[in-house]
Image 1 (tube, helix red, strand yellow):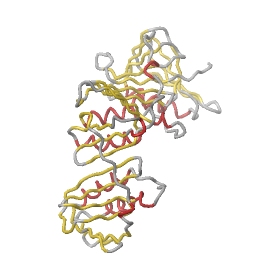
Image 2 (image 1 turned 90 degrees about the vertical axis):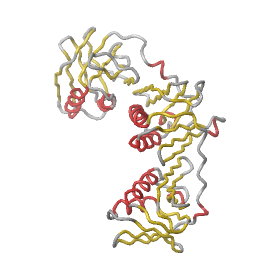
Image 3 (image 1 turned 135 degrees about the vertical axis):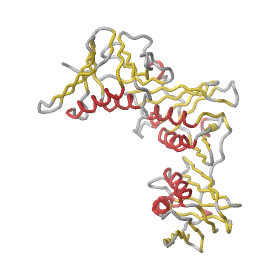
Image 4 (image 1 turned 180 degrees about the horizontal axis):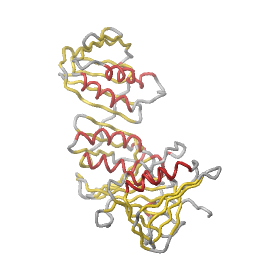
Length: 377
């Protein structure tokens, strides 16, 4: 194998592929990225039996072939290279990389020991790449990081006709995003539970490419569940989580509300961050709403206290409610709007945050539900 490639294209391809490699691989070859040159195209691949990544780069190919090298090491090297074309050649059991006056020799691993990447499942439809990336970011923030409850670490994707819905919850908050997409089959109705981290990383890299992202879904039995995403020259597949017993979380959204507040998103985020400086890890910030506006306060140990007032438009009976400050900031920061509307039932029921337009009306499509923390005053 021998080829020449632009430094930026190589560095970007290797970095993206290496990102999904396991930190502690079950077998050494899974820590590698596969470089395969065929007919002037370089395929950079990674696979850990859960997630596969593949990107194609145009190169000047002198000799076709394949080599398997440490992904993280190659990513660090390519990122640090000078801005010049890179010459790469497989020589015996090593990979030689030359860029300007920089020269690296890396050991290779046996290509024949590397597992075959899974085929892309059957296409289910397409969605705008940038809109999809923004929507995934809004939802993935609410997914759990607790690996002991695998089901909660996923984002539930619900495809129903021309509507794509995504839900995620860690039992303390719940995010729901609904958007339009273009199904191959207008009658399509299928659900999938995708690992949130994989979905977020994939959407984040496909979003800036623009154009459309193709969603591909295996529609066989639960045991062979797999989802695929492709956009531009990149493709990713991931095993699905078992979502057979995913709770009916949509029912958590209250059917009615007794109070409503409209606030500036950036102002409330700043105020909560300041006031939370005195709060301990498990201490909530208190939001007191009244006709006069909003007061945010928090208390910590050794009598440390903080409070700050800000403008808010509020309708309903005066209300004081406590929230985890980070969960509140996460929800506000992902609204993608200048204003937020908060709906309340009472101080002990979940509150719902929605993006709002200049007129104060909620913008449909995204809702973030947050559980209150009971406080005694």
